[in-house]
Image 1 (cartoon, rainbow, N blue to C red):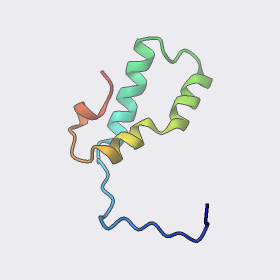
Image 2 (cartoon, one colour):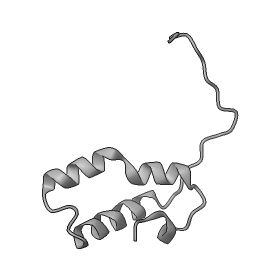
Image 3 (cartoon, rainbow, N blue to C red):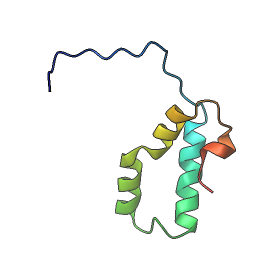
Image 4 (cartoon, rainbow, N blue to C red):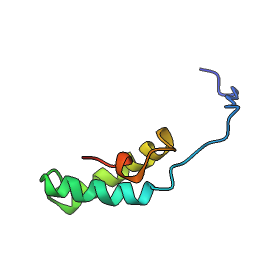
Amino acid sequence: MPQNVVFDIPVPPRYNPAHDHAEQHNLRWLRQHRMLVTPAAETLYLSWGIADLAARCWPDASAEDLGLG
């Protein structure tokens, strides 16, 4: 694949300001359902950036809708 390709996206990026709330809510939810039972599992989950992805995909979602559960 050529390396000199420029892929411009003509719209400004948007980001949901409830990202931090969603991340903390997701961690609580996952712990409550015993899906994160070790610090290593939590570190791995956070490295995936799930709340960041959700904040970028749904910039207008409410804080409650952005989180799991």
